[in-house]
Amino acid sequence: MTELFEVAPEIAAPVYTMSLLHAGGRERARAVYDRYPRVFPYVWPTTFAVLRAHAAIEFGDHAEIRALYERLAGHSGTIAGIETGLCRHLGPMDSTLADLAVALGNTKKAAIHRARAEALLLRMRADPAVIDLEVSRPRMTTSA
Image (cartoon, rainbow, N blue to C red; front, side, top):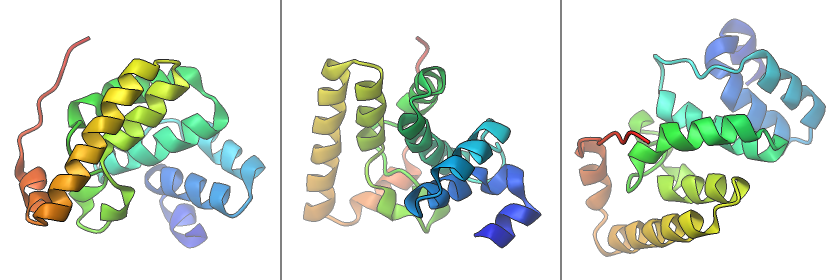
């Protein structure tokens, strides 16, 4: 991961930040997080926004938490990371949205997102083809 970050830091920063956090490198992770605040828009922006969201929660960055909640809310009902074809392990987008809502102090929205995440997981367990449907589903944006 370090090599990728050294070659393309603007792209790899969210992944590298989370890797550092998981490895116990909180101080270095925070430095990378602060140095590269923008999610690169051309390579899996939704997936990388999810990773940045988890880092924002970890660092208590409320302005970024709010911005990322608004950015990701239009993807409610989908699988986070599915745009990559590789990162299905990130789970339902609503799980991330619930975590962001909790960090913003909105437990009502968090409960709604957790229920949506569970409903999607139940649908996927009943019919794995749901994953493919979620990839091709048009995204609705909301204005708030």
